[in-house]
Length: 107
Image (cartoon, rainbow, N blue to C red):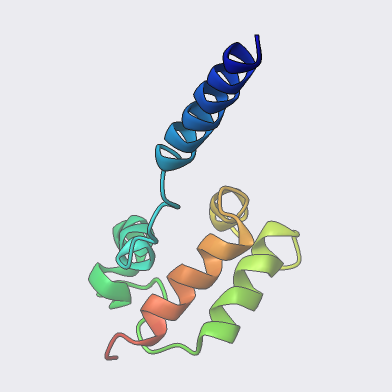
């Protein structure tokens, strides 16, 4: 009887150890996520934020300025034709990644 309990305990312990070894590692952060998200801005603001049209360039703009403008568009504080809708589609973290990427781009 006692050996059956020990065998069951060892089996449970072994199963627990096996499960612990198969827990996936945390996902790595995509170092290009800011760039990839900012690519969606290229239709209006140009590649890497360098506009060639009437729309403002975003390249080299301080991140805090871009972040605040995105919040203002989202909250309806700035007039817009489409930016108020686009701004609502991003999380604060995504906006920060976009702004940080664009800030590093040469004007």
